[in-house]
Length: 293
Image 1 (cartoon, helix red, strand yellow):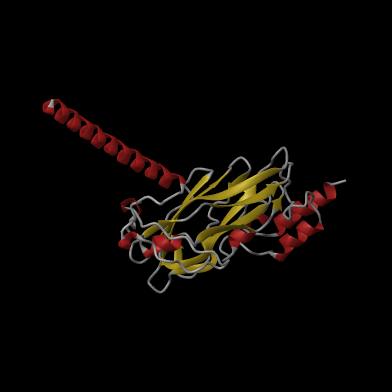
Image 2: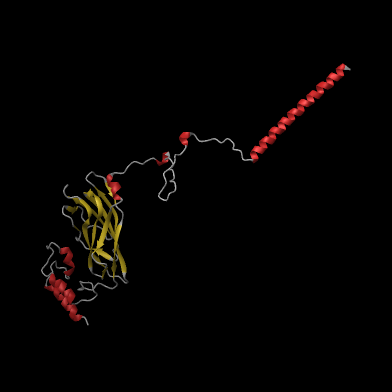
């Protein structure tokens, strides 16, 4: 009897312990659920003190400025350009025509030059392109406009439509720099069926300084409108008729010949191609004036 009572006693005690453990577990679960509902903060990994961005000064509008991200390896600085190459982006070559509109047969000039060139340039290689169907280059008309600068190559053998020109300075005291005209080219308008835009452009310009550093310039162009019609012999002022105005222009240059310093500027007044502006040229114009109705 005693043994049976002892076994019952231990069974009751074990059951009581199990009940107490279950009550404790239930209580802890209920407490955790209550903490989640009240928004109790949970542990969050904080950045290290060295990684925390510091406060930034306010911008112009009072809002904080953004913090720049650190440069990645791909953003590393590239090798620097030469002084000539760096300056080339702020420089340009230019083309300027002596007339905005010309008649067939009328001569005009186009000047090549620099704008805001900071380098001292001692050599230039230039390619000029034009449409030979609407204009022709006047042979031997090219001339350097700056002292101490010369055209090195021969232009007389070049094919129509393109001029390859090489310029060089004659000594250290003759650099080409800044802004100004450098080269003059003569053209003559062709006969066209309708008014046409005649475009002259710099297709390529490579310059070099005294260190031998080369740099290329952006293209440049100029447009001259060419009026429709055929070339009228004697119409030297391009107004579409032969009149006393043409006669006066020839008379003002009377006696000039191919040895004159500015012959390329006036050779279009030599109507008979004799190499001299003389009475024969005046007679051609006078005859045309009389023949006109």
